Length: 434
Ligand SMILES: Cc1cc2nc3c(=O)[nH]c(=O)nc-3n(C[C@H](O)[C@H](O)[C@H](O)COP(=O)(O)OP(=O)(O)OC[C@H]3O[C@@H](n4cnc5c(N)ncnc54)[C@H](O)[C@@H]3O)c2cc1C
Image 1 (cartoon, helix red, strand yellow):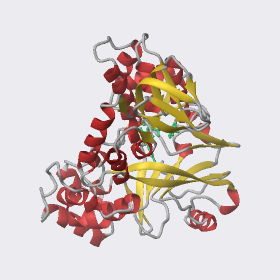
Image 2 (image 1 turned 180 degrees about the vertical axis):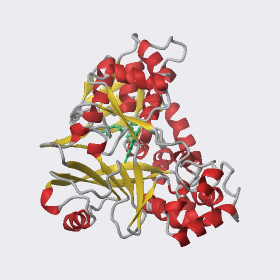
Image 3 (image 1 turned 60 degrees about the vertical axis):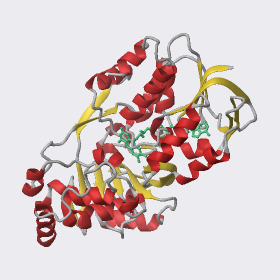
Image 4 (image 1 turned 180 degrees about the horizontal axis):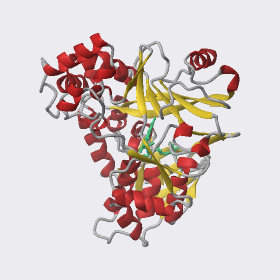
């Protein structure tokens, strides 16, 4: 019998385990053959690819320093560089603070729509849709030229089907003077961080796994959760009894495998949806001069990816000297045609076709939670039903949120705290709860 059984050995599950007090024992069940979840890397000869592109940008300096102290090679820092590629033109990021880089007619339309915004204030209440909020905040020009095409390409649904509240923090706003000046982000380029060495971002879950106690079982895919008998069954048939269950699995997956609950609870999961993505990896021995930023965003519909990441700009350890490790993120499960992608990179001067040494595509079934209208009520009902049965959910997909690394770790810590609300926080929890 496990005191605490944790489903999923990504950041949230591992942070929860690391923060449990000494008198609690935990077992982690992880489906993959290594821990880390999204924070894993694929080493391919001289090239190293994050499973999805990651940089570290913590709000808490203390948490950042705690992490730096745990990583054997520390963290190196670099400024954010990113831009938008639209209609063959490079526009600095964020679009809404760089109107001067737009073609004249587009610039005038965006700025006039911002100045005399007929939708001003319409998206300010907590129940606003993403479309209402974006138009209310930036006006019809910016909406039509950038926010709508980019976000519909990424999310794959009309923006009036999404709630604005959980997405607002991801888009810098609230600086009208800077929008009208159109000369760049008033906040400047933030400092970003990444672990040194070829293990890259995957080092973070590794060090986190060392902080906790109790078994971490990899290759252990949970396939059935019986809430009545408090038993989890894994794919090879082995059963685990538990007192408390913490799940960082995507909520719809947990609900599908849940038994011992009324059908209406299980069926709530079918109303939740997330965007899958396909991540194309390109490794090339040499690189052209075009699109050199860490990230380039592509709102245009005729480009199959919505974002390109140059990993060698994040860490020189991820590509051979003079070469590049590129990630191209495409919404959906269909990989773009390889030859068309390579021809595009060649034609744009990003990578010469003959320099390409590695090409692969990798699917991420849950990438971005879709905050469909009404999801909050559904989430409340699911959480209540699960918590009545001793099941806590955590993490980006268990908590059903737009979480970055810092938020995923904190949500794991909070799950540990909820299991032991009166106990003194452990040393680990104290460091990371900063
Ligand atoms: C495209 C993209 C880019 C991102 N970029 C950044 C960034 O630059 N900076 C940043 O701070 N954050 C970024 N993030 C967010 C960050 O990756 C997540 O917040 C974090 O990794 C979530 O950790 P988690 O533990 O909640 O989930 P996960 O990493 O998904 O962990 C869940 C674990 O559960 C396991 N699992 C699934 N099913 C089962 C099962 N049936 N049985 C057992 N185990 C199972 C999975 O294998 C996985 O290990 C990005 C996310 C995406 C999608």
